Image 1 (cartoon, one colour):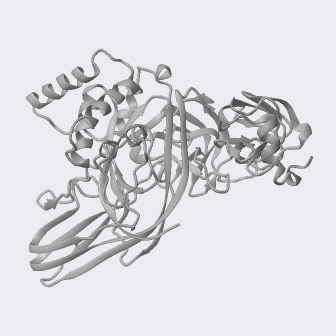
Image 2: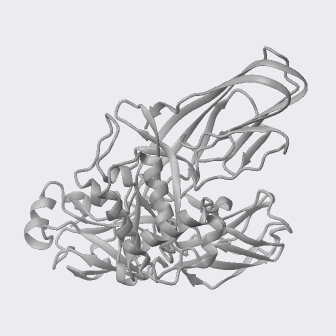
Image 3: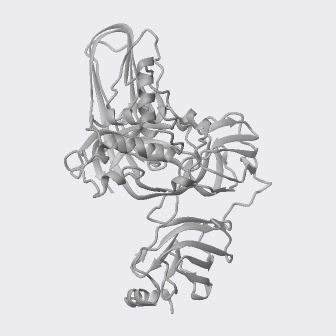
Length: 512
């Protein structure tokens, strides 16, 4: 029977013949990258002991009935149809649909052309199978002697409405690039990457694609439920008194890049920045401004935000964390010896002799939930300090929460790193049930906000961004508990003796 002709009968047939009451769940695909006509094995549970009218969907392409070699409650073997380069594979059981898992095919991989002049060429990836966070070496030629604006892209594991994925760039601000020359690249596999294609893009064009297998994760990470925000924000400056020469710099935070907030499009800005993007900020300069000078800098962006859900099998987490990931972390706050000793003692009292990083983070989170909230910023800084004292890689993340009425509120949460898995989110304040008016918490908020995060937020900094002043004799202004954690927001020098500034809130102008 054609799947398109099943109609309303699907539910009854599935309910009584094949599907169980549980939601079908995919845990593993073997292989993650295949060829049209070959078989893929789907591991999981609640598929039903018989197929009945259940089926596998390759991004909306449904195999014929004769394509199935095996079907039981925990395993499906099906022939791969012609669906394109990549898709979200799901199992449909009546009205119940499984999670989506990215599946790619080799069929659409570009063929290396000897006539392509000047384009970068990948000849090998070493190793060809690795983990998130590990360094890989991309061998070939035509990459250029320096990176400049060139990028390396991986396959991204986000679920999108179309079933297709966008490429995932290596993030420089998270220690992604180790080495770049014309024949050899060394890059860190970014958080959110899955098995699939790797590509190098330079000013001359895109390379051929090469396959990379990502394996060994101690659990699953779902990047899902995309929400698109249209945002606007600004800063007004007024110089009351000045003499020449002088300058004024504004360090305007940009929406951050991460595996759950990857795509942002500039909609409008009234002034071009002096530097487009320096460590997550746009730098605006005003030189030799007279007394009475006033200027407004305004920008608007379209930003995609995903929710994230993680399921970690603690016994599979490696206690030996990747040391080089520390390059992605900002320096820990400087503590005097008595504070450092106190925090280390407290961290040891909480975690004891535990060596498992995931379990240690859970113990610290649970301890903080038992304490009264000190505000999101202080809660997170306490979590990060205790985590680092317990030898965990943890960073604060700053941005805004978005309430039902589109009101935004500066907020801070955290992430900690698991080797081979990536960043795991933690929101201590919301985990305590302390939420602003109009912000809807899930029913199981204490459990949910350790490892999962909603899409009702935007981030502007991952870690505490340390910016270098442009003039050692200048004056800088910081705003430590705002929607971005950066040490400099404004810098003035020379003859500016009196000025004022007003930074607007993040305004939500549309949600899609």
